Image 1 (cartoon, rainbow, N blue to C red):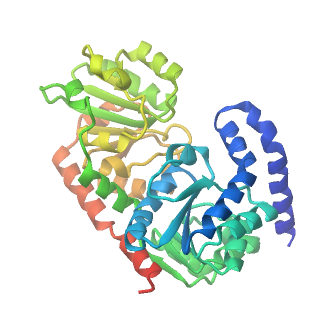
Image 2: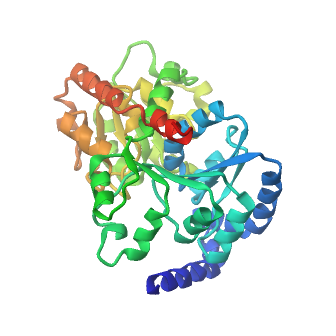
Length: 406
Protein backbone atom coordinates (compact mmCIF):
# COMPACT_ATOMS: atom_id res chain seq x y z
CA UNK A 1 0.00 0.00 0.00
CA UNK A 2 2.86 2.38 0.83
CA UNK A 3 4.51 1.84 -2.55
CA UNK A 4 1.19 2.41 -4.31
CA UNK A 5 0.68 5.70 -2.46
CA UNK A 6 4.21 6.87 -3.17
CA UNK A 7 3.87 5.89 -6.82
CA UNK A 8 0.63 7.83 -7.28
CA UNK A 9 2.08 10.91 -5.58
CA UNK A 10 5.10 10.75 -7.90
CA UNK A 11 2.94 10.40 -11.01
CA UNK A 12 0.82 13.38 -9.99
CA UNK A 13 4.02 15.34 -9.42
CA UNK A 14 5.27 14.43 -12.89
CA UNK A 15 1.96 15.52 -14.38
CA UNK A 16 2.21 18.87 -12.60
CA UNK A 17 5.83 19.51 -13.58
CA UNK A 18 5.73 18.28 -17.18
CA UNK A 19 4.42 21.56 -18.67
CA UNK A 20 7.38 23.38 -17.11
CA UNK A 21 9.82 20.72 -18.30
CA UNK A 22 8.36 21.08 -21.80
CA UNK A 23 9.97 24.50 -22.03
CA UNK A 24 13.29 22.71 -22.41
CA UNK A 25 12.25 21.83 -25.96
CA UNK A 26 13.04 18.70 -27.95
CA UNK A 27 11.31 15.44 -27.09
CA UNK A 28 10.23 16.71 -23.67
CA UNK A 29 8.31 19.53 -25.34
CA UNK A 30 6.62 17.07 -27.71
CA UNK A 31 5.70 14.83 -24.77
CA UNK A 32 4.30 17.77 -22.82
CA UNK A 33 2.26 18.93 -25.80
CA UNK A 34 0.93 15.42 -26.36
CA UNK A 35 -0.12 15.09 -22.73
CA UNK A 36 -1.69 18.55 -22.73
CA UNK A 37 -3.93 17.62 -25.66
CA UNK A 38 -5.09 14.34 -24.13
CA UNK A 39 -8.49 15.58 -22.83
CA UNK A 40 -9.52 16.32 -26.42
CA UNK A 41 -7.88 13.07 -27.56
CA UNK A 42 -9.83 11.04 -25.00
CA UNK A 43 -13.07 12.66 -26.12
CA UNK A 44 -12.28 11.84 -29.76
CA UNK A 45 -11.31 8.30 -28.74
CA UNK A 46 -14.67 7.76 -27.05
CA UNK A 47 -16.45 8.91 -30.20
CA UNK A 48 -14.38 6.62 -32.38
CA UNK A 49 -14.94 3.67 -30.03
CA UNK A 50 -18.70 4.06 -30.16
CA UNK A 51 -18.58 3.27 -33.89
CA UNK A 52 -16.54 0.06 -33.45
CA UNK A 53 -17.92 -3.41 -32.83
CA UNK A 54 -14.71 -4.63 -31.18
CA UNK A 55 -11.35 -3.05 -30.40
CA UNK A 56 -7.84 -4.40 -29.92
CA UNK A 57 -5.37 -2.02 -28.32
CA UNK A 58 -1.62 -2.23 -28.94
CA UNK A 59 0.62 -0.20 -26.64
CA UNK A 60 4.26 0.41 -27.59
CA UNK A 61 6.60 2.53 -25.49
CA UNK A 62 8.46 3.85 -28.50
CA UNK A 63 9.51 3.07 -32.06
CA UNK A 64 11.52 -0.04 -31.21
CA UNK A 65 8.59 -1.62 -29.42
CA UNK A 66 6.33 -0.68 -32.32
CA UNK A 67 8.56 -2.70 -34.64
CA UNK A 68 8.17 -5.64 -32.26
CA UNK A 69 4.40 -5.32 -32.13
CA UNK A 70 3.97 -4.53 -35.80
CA UNK A 71 4.04 -8.13 -37.14
CA UNK A 72 1.28 -9.11 -34.70
CA UNK A 73 -0.78 -5.99 -35.39
CA UNK A 74 -0.62 -6.40 -39.15
CA UNK A 75 -1.33 -10.13 -39.10
CA UNK A 76 -4.22 -9.60 -36.68
CA UNK A 77 -5.65 -6.87 -38.90
CA UNK A 78 -5.59 -9.19 -41.90
CA UNK A 79 -7.32 -12.01 -40.03
CA UNK A 80 -9.78 -9.84 -38.06
CA UNK A 81 -11.07 -6.98 -40.22
CA UNK A 82 -14.03 -6.49 -37.88
CA UNK A 83 -11.77 -5.16 -35.11
CA UNK A 84 -10.86 -1.51 -34.77
CA UNK A 85 -7.19 -1.05 -33.88
CA UNK A 86 -6.03 1.44 -31.26
CA UNK A 87 -2.30 2.14 -31.15
CA UNK A 88 -0.68 4.13 -28.35
CA UNK A 89 2.84 5.36 -27.64
CA UNK A 90 4.36 6.92 -24.58
CA UNK A 91 7.46 8.35 -26.25
CA UNK A 92 7.47 11.04 -28.94
CA UNK A 93 10.13 8.95 -30.70
CA UNK A 94 7.42 6.45 -31.51
CA UNK A 95 4.38 8.66 -31.88
CA UNK A 96 5.91 11.33 -34.09
CA UNK A 97 7.25 8.77 -36.55
CA UNK A 98 4.17 6.52 -36.66
CA UNK A 99 1.25 8.87 -36.00
CA UNK A 100 0.08 8.39 -39.59
CA UNK A 101 0.58 4.62 -39.73
CA UNK A 102 -2.16 3.42 -42.04
CA UNK A 103 -2.94 0.02 -40.48
CA UNK A 104 -4.08 1.39 -37.13
CA UNK A 105 -7.39 3.21 -36.87
CA UNK A 106 -6.73 5.49 -33.88
CA UNK A 107 -3.21 6.52 -32.84
CA UNK A 108 -2.39 8.68 -29.84
CA UNK A 109 -0.21 9.16 -26.79
CA UNK A 110 -0.77 7.10 -23.67
CA UNK A 111 -1.63 9.40 -20.76
CA UNK A 112 0.57 9.66 -17.71
CA UNK A 113 -0.25 6.87 -15.29
CA UNK A 114 -2.27 8.81 -12.74
CA UNK A 115 -5.36 7.02 -11.37
CA UNK A 116 -7.76 9.47 -13.03
CA UNK A 117 -5.85 9.60 -16.31
CA UNK A 118 -5.78 5.82 -16.59
CA UNK A 119 -9.46 5.47 -15.70
CA UNK A 120 -10.62 8.09 -18.21
CA UNK A 121 -8.57 6.62 -21.02
CA UNK A 122 -9.66 3.00 -20.52
CA UNK A 123 -13.30 4.03 -20.16
CA UNK A 124 -13.04 5.85 -23.48
CA UNK A 125 -11.18 3.04 -25.28
CA UNK A 126 -13.22 0.11 -23.89
CA UNK A 127 -10.85 -2.48 -25.45
CA UNK A 128 -11.82 -6.10 -25.90
CA UNK A 129 -8.15 -7.08 -26.05
CA UNK A 130 -5.09 -5.12 -24.89
CA UNK A 131 -1.62 -6.09 -26.09
CA UNK A 132 1.36 -4.66 -24.22
CA UNK A 133 4.64 -4.86 -26.14
CA UNK A 134 7.85 -5.65 -24.20
CA UNK A 135 8.03 -2.83 -21.65
CA UNK A 136 6.04 -0.29 -19.62
CA UNK A 137 4.04 -2.03 -16.93
CA UNK A 138 2.04 1.01 -15.81
CA UNK A 139 0.21 -0.04 -12.60
CA UNK A 140 -2.88 2.18 -12.82
CA UNK A 141 -3.41 1.61 -16.53
CA UNK A 142 -3.05 -2.14 -16.22
CA UNK A 143 -5.43 -2.27 -13.25
CA UNK A 144 -8.06 -0.30 -15.19
CA UNK A 145 -7.70 -2.54 -18.25
CA UNK A 146 -8.16 -5.65 -16.16
CA UNK A 147 -11.13 -4.21 -14.30
CA UNK A 148 -12.75 -3.30 -17.64
CA UNK A 149 -12.99 -6.98 -18.52
CA UNK A 150 -10.57 -6.82 -21.45
CA UNK A 151 -8.12 -9.65 -22.14
CA UNK A 152 -4.65 -8.38 -21.33
CA UNK A 153 -1.53 -10.01 -22.79
CA UNK A 154 2.13 -9.10 -23.06
CA UNK A 155 4.28 -9.99 -26.06
CA UNK A 156 8.03 -10.05 -26.69
CA UNK A 157 8.53 -9.61 -22.95
CA UNK A 158 12.00 -9.99 -21.51
CA UNK A 159 12.78 -9.90 -17.79
CA UNK A 160 15.96 -9.48 -15.77
CA UNK A 161 16.70 -10.56 -12.22
CA UNK A 162 17.32 -6.99 -11.00
CA UNK A 163 13.83 -5.76 -11.91
CA UNK A 164 11.48 -4.76 -9.10
CA UNK A 165 9.07 -7.64 -9.85
CA UNK A 166 11.63 -10.12 -8.54
CA UNK A 167 12.93 -8.26 -5.50
CA UNK A 168 11.83 -9.18 -1.96
CA UNK A 169 10.14 -5.78 -1.58
CA UNK A 170 8.46 -5.91 -4.99
CA UNK A 171 4.99 -7.16 -4.06
CA UNK A 172 3.30 -4.05 -5.48
CA UNK A 173 4.99 -4.64 -8.82
CA UNK A 174 4.35 -8.39 -8.85
CA UNK A 175 0.63 -7.66 -8.65
CA UNK A 176 0.97 -5.88 -12.01
CA UNK A 177 2.23 -9.05 -13.69
CA UNK A 178 -0.46 -11.19 -12.13
CA UNK A 179 -3.12 -9.00 -13.76
CA UNK A 180 -2.01 -10.22 -17.20
CA UNK A 181 -3.98 -13.07 -18.72
CA UNK A 182 -0.89 -14.33 -20.55
CA UNK A 183 2.73 -13.34 -21.15
CA UNK A 184 4.72 -14.32 -24.23
CA UNK A 185 8.36 -14.06 -23.17
CA UNK A 186 11.48 -13.99 -25.30
CA UNK A 187 13.63 -16.53 -23.48
CA UNK A 188 13.83 -19.29 -20.87
CA UNK A 189 15.50 -16.99 -18.33
CA UNK A 190 12.40 -14.76 -18.32
CA UNK A 191 10.17 -17.82 -17.91
CA UNK A 192 12.19 -19.01 -14.91
CA UNK A 193 11.84 -15.61 -13.25
CA UNK A 194 8.06 -15.77 -13.69
CA UNK A 195 7.97 -19.27 -12.25
CA UNK A 196 9.90 -17.97 -9.26
CA UNK A 197 7.10 -15.56 -8.35
CA UNK A 198 4.34 -18.08 -8.97
CA UNK A 199 3.21 -16.79 -12.37
CA UNK A 200 2.21 -19.75 -14.55
CA UNK A 201 0.50 -18.30 -17.64
CA UNK A 202 3.44 -17.88 -19.98
CA UNK A 203 5.00 -19.26 -23.14
CA UNK A 204 8.51 -18.84 -24.52
CA UNK A 205 7.64 -17.55 -27.97
CA UNK A 206 10.76 -15.56 -28.83
CA UNK A 207 10.98 -12.04 -30.17
CA UNK A 208 8.50 -10.88 -32.82
CA UNK A 209 11.19 -8.61 -34.26
CA UNK A 210 12.66 -11.66 -35.98
CA UNK A 211 9.42 -12.01 -37.95
CA UNK A 212 9.48 -8.31 -38.73
CA UNK A 213 13.07 -8.11 -39.95
CA UNK A 214 12.70 -11.26 -42.04
CA UNK A 215 9.60 -9.84 -43.73
CA UNK A 216 11.44 -6.56 -44.32
CA UNK A 217 14.42 -8.35 -45.86
CA UNK A 218 12.20 -10.43 -48.13
CA UNK A 219 10.33 -7.35 -49.32
CA UNK A 220 13.22 -4.89 -49.30
CA UNK A 221 13.00 -2.64 -52.33
CA UNK A 222 15.89 -0.66 -53.73
CA UNK A 223 16.53 2.64 -51.99
CA UNK A 224 16.54 5.27 -54.75
CA UNK A 225 19.95 6.71 -55.51
CA UNK A 226 22.04 4.28 -53.47
CA UNK A 227 23.29 2.24 -56.43
CA UNK A 228 24.44 5.45 -58.10
CA UNK A 229 26.32 6.38 -54.91
CA UNK A 230 27.98 2.95 -54.75
CA UNK A 231 28.96 2.92 -58.41
CA UNK A 232 29.88 -0.06 -60.56
CA UNK A 233 33.09 -1.20 -58.85
CA UNK A 234 31.36 -3.15 -56.03
CA UNK A 235 33.29 -1.54 -53.17
CA UNK A 236 33.13 -2.74 -49.60
CA UNK A 237 30.34 -0.83 -47.85
CA UNK A 238 29.93 -0.02 -44.18
CA UNK A 239 26.43 1.03 -43.14
CA UNK A 240 26.38 2.84 -39.81
CA UNK A 241 22.86 2.86 -38.40
CA UNK A 242 21.34 4.99 -35.62
CA UNK A 243 24.69 6.56 -34.78
CA UNK A 244 25.39 9.12 -32.06
CA UNK A 245 28.41 11.44 -31.83
CA UNK A 246 30.19 8.81 -29.69
CA UNK A 247 29.80 6.26 -32.49
CA UNK A 248 31.19 8.78 -34.96
CA UNK A 249 34.26 9.22 -32.76
CA UNK A 250 35.08 5.57 -33.52
CA UNK A 251 33.94 5.63 -37.15
CA UNK A 252 35.63 8.90 -38.18
CA UNK A 253 39.27 7.64 -38.16
CA UNK A 254 38.20 4.46 -39.93
CA UNK A 255 36.58 6.52 -42.71
CA UNK A 256 39.77 8.56 -43.06
CA UNK A 257 41.87 5.38 -43.31
CA UNK A 258 39.70 3.75 -46.00
CA UNK A 259 39.06 6.00 -48.99
CA UNK A 260 38.52 2.85 -51.10
CA UNK A 261 35.37 1.95 -49.13
CA UNK A 262 31.89 3.48 -49.16
CA UNK A 263 30.14 4.63 -46.00
CA UNK A 264 26.42 5.14 -45.49
CA UNK A 265 25.76 6.91 -42.19
CA UNK A 266 22.26 7.15 -40.70
CA UNK A 267 22.20 9.35 -37.56
CA UNK A 268 19.93 8.48 -34.65
CA UNK A 269 18.75 12.09 -34.57
CA UNK A 270 18.57 13.86 -37.91
CA UNK A 271 19.82 17.26 -36.84
CA UNK A 272 20.95 19.45 -39.75
CA UNK A 273 23.64 21.13 -37.65
CA UNK A 274 25.02 17.77 -36.51
CA UNK A 275 25.20 16.39 -40.05
CA UNK A 276 26.78 19.66 -41.21
CA UNK A 277 29.49 19.22 -38.59
CA UNK A 278 30.16 15.61 -39.59
CA UNK A 279 30.32 16.60 -43.26
CA UNK A 280 33.01 19.11 -42.37
CA UNK A 281 35.03 16.39 -40.65
CA UNK A 282 34.68 13.51 -43.12
CA UNK A 283 33.51 15.06 -46.36
CA UNK A 284 30.55 13.51 -48.11
CA UNK A 285 27.02 14.27 -49.19
CA UNK A 286 23.45 14.37 -47.89
CA UNK A 287 20.95 11.79 -49.11
CA UNK A 288 18.34 14.52 -49.69
CA UNK A 289 20.69 15.90 -52.37
CA UNK A 290 21.56 12.54 -53.93
CA UNK A 291 20.26 13.62 -57.34
CA UNK A 292 23.18 16.06 -57.54
CA UNK A 293 25.77 13.71 -56.05
CA UNK A 294 29.19 14.74 -57.42
CA UNK A 295 31.16 11.73 -56.16
CA UNK A 296 32.78 10.72 -52.88
CA UNK A 297 32.64 7.86 -50.41
CA UNK A 298 30.44 9.09 -47.52
CA UNK A 299 26.68 9.53 -47.64
CA UNK A 300 24.69 10.91 -44.70
CA UNK A 301 21.06 9.83 -44.52
CA UNK A 302 18.92 12.83 -43.58
CA UNK A 303 15.58 11.08 -44.16
CA UNK A 304 13.74 8.71 -41.83
CA UNK A 305 12.41 5.24 -42.55
CA UNK A 306 15.24 4.00 -44.78
CA UNK A 307 17.65 2.28 -42.42
CA UNK A 308 16.20 -1.23 -42.42
CA UNK A 309 16.47 -1.32 -46.22
CA UNK A 310 19.91 0.28 -46.34
CA UNK A 311 21.50 -2.71 -44.61
CA UNK A 312 20.93 -4.74 -47.78
CA UNK A 313 23.86 -2.83 -49.32
CA UNK A 314 26.22 -3.47 -46.40
CA UNK A 315 29.41 -5.49 -46.29
CA UNK A 316 29.67 -4.50 -42.63
CA UNK A 317 27.30 -2.80 -40.19
CA UNK A 318 28.07 -0.51 -37.29
CA UNK A 319 25.00 -0.18 -35.07
CA UNK A 320 24.88 2.87 -32.85
CA UNK A 321 24.14 3.41 -29.18
CA UNK A 322 26.73 1.05 -27.76
CA UNK A 323 29.06 3.88 -26.82
CA UNK A 324 26.28 5.88 -25.22
CA UNK A 325 22.78 5.03 -23.94
CA UNK A 326 22.37 1.47 -25.13
CA UNK A 327 22.39 -0.56 -28.32
CA UNK A 328 19.94 -0.01 -31.16
CA UNK A 329 18.44 -2.74 -33.37
CA UNK A 330 21.06 -5.23 -34.56
CA UNK A 331 18.55 -7.68 -36.04
CA UNK A 332 18.00 -5.40 -39.03
CA UNK A 333 21.56 -5.97 -40.33
CA UNK A 334 21.69 -9.56 -39.03
CA UNK A 335 18.90 -10.65 -41.36
CA UNK A 336 21.10 -9.65 -44.32
CA UNK A 337 23.97 -11.77 -43.01
CA UNK A 338 26.54 -9.03 -42.43
CA UNK A 339 29.09 -8.71 -39.61
CA UNK A 340 27.89 -6.31 -36.93
CA UNK A 341 29.93 -3.96 -34.72
CA UNK A 342 28.85 -1.97 -31.70
CA UNK A 343 30.20 -0.36 -28.57
CA UNK A 344 30.71 -2.05 -25.19
CA UNK A 345 27.97 -0.32 -23.18
CA UNK A 346 24.75 -2.02 -22.07
CA UNK A 347 24.48 -4.54 -24.88
CA UNK A 348 24.15 -7.40 -22.37
CA UNK A 349 20.43 -6.76 -21.83
CA UNK A 350 19.75 -7.62 -25.48
CA UNK A 351 19.56 -11.37 -25.96
CA UNK A 352 20.30 -11.13 -29.68
CA UNK A 353 23.51 -9.20 -28.97
CA UNK A 354 24.72 -11.87 -26.58
CA UNK A 355 23.76 -14.65 -29.01
CA UNK A 356 25.37 -13.05 -32.06
CA UNK A 357 28.56 -12.29 -30.15
CA UNK A 358 28.83 -15.96 -29.22
CA UNK A 359 28.32 -16.93 -32.87
CA UNK A 360 31.01 -14.53 -34.08
CA UNK A 361 28.51 -12.56 -36.15
CA UNK A 362 28.66 -9.53 -33.85
CA UNK A 363 31.65 -7.83 -32.25
CA UNK A 364 31.83 -5.40 -29.35
CA UNK A 365 34.52 -2.86 -30.21
CA UNK A 366 36.16 -0.61 -27.64
CA UNK A 367 37.61 2.03 -29.95
CA UNK A 368 39.19 0.62 -33.12
CA UNK A 369 37.34 -1.21 -35.90
CA UNK A 370 40.49 -2.10 -37.84
CA UNK A 371 41.68 -5.23 -36.01
CA UNK A 372 38.24 -6.87 -36.14
CA UNK A 373 37.45 -6.13 -39.79
CA UNK A 374 40.82 -7.38 -41.00
CA UNK A 375 40.13 -10.97 -39.95
CA UNK A 376 36.56 -11.85 -40.97
CA UNK A 377 35.21 -14.78 -42.98
CA UNK A 378 32.23 -13.05 -44.60
CA UNK A 379 30.73 -16.24 -46.01
CA UNK A 380 30.78 -17.96 -42.62
CA UNK A 381 29.27 -14.92 -40.94
CA UNK A 382 26.50 -14.77 -43.53
CA UNK A 383 25.54 -18.42 -42.99
CA UNK A 384 25.54 -18.14 -39.19
CA UNK A 385 23.53 -14.92 -39.15
CA UNK A 386 20.83 -16.14 -41.52
CA UNK A 387 20.55 -19.47 -39.70
CA UNK A 388 20.17 -17.64 -36.38
CA UNK A 389 17.34 -15.47 -37.69
CA UNK A 390 15.61 -18.48 -39.25
CA UNK A 391 15.76 -20.40 -35.93
CA UNK A 392 14.09 -17.59 -34.06
CA UNK A 393 11.15 -16.72 -36.28
CA UNK A 394 7.58 -17.80 -35.57
CA UNK A 395 6.57 -15.80 -32.47
CA UNK A 396 3.83 -13.99 -34.38
CA UNK A 397 2.09 -17.24 -35.31
CA UNK A 398 2.10 -18.42 -31.67
CA UNK A 399 0.59 -15.15 -30.46
CA UNK A 400 -2.11 -15.12 -33.14
CA UNK A 401 -3.12 -18.66 -32.21
CA UNK A 402 -3.60 -17.57 -28.64
CA UNK A 403 -5.61 -14.51 -29.62
CA UNK A 404 -7.80 -16.72 -31.78
CA UNK A 405 -8.43 -19.04 -28.84
CA UNK A 406 -6.67 -22.01 -30.43
